[in-house]
Amino acid sequence: MAENVKKQKGALMVEILIATTIITVALLALFGIASIIIKQHSGADKTNQAIGLAQEALEATRSFRDGTNWSAGGLGSLTMGVDYHPQITGTPPQWQLVLGEETVGIFKRKIVFYKAMRDAGGMFVEPGGIEDVNARKVKAIISWEQKNIEIVSYFTNWR
Image 1 (cartoon, rainbow, N blue to C red):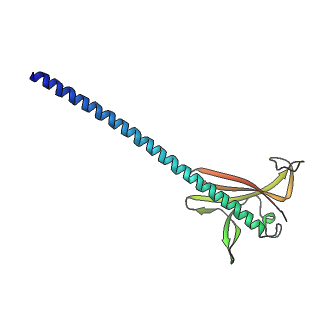
Image 2 (image 1 turned 180 degrees about the vertical axis):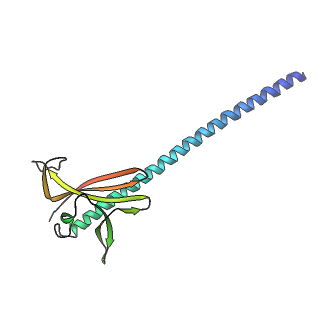
Image 3 (image 1 turned 135 degrees about the vertical axis):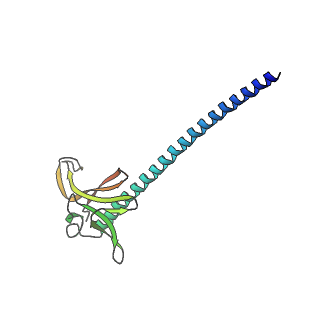
């Protein structure tokens, strides 16, 4: 009978060891999944911030366009293919476009202007077409941690 009790105790110890191992593996898997979810959420949050910064840059560009003369100090006079960034200056505060790229937290932000090209029907096209001197293609570019967001818009001399 004593031998039977020893066998039962030994079997119980093996069962406890197996159950502990299974629970440990399951918990490690759950922690791994939780870690992945947290990283993805953090990445999505940064992407949303970058999109917001790009949209703000385009809105600042729109405000700058509306407050200036197109060809005399406005969008029509800016250099194509050069980096600019939005900056609030003056009293009352107004958006200006300043040369270079800016850093906002972990993000780098720039706005680049290009010639706007139209087809015979008046639609913006790439590549080719005829240059519209009263329009600009604008790219707001946000970069961080080897990632990049680009939002393209077109601005016209509406006056």
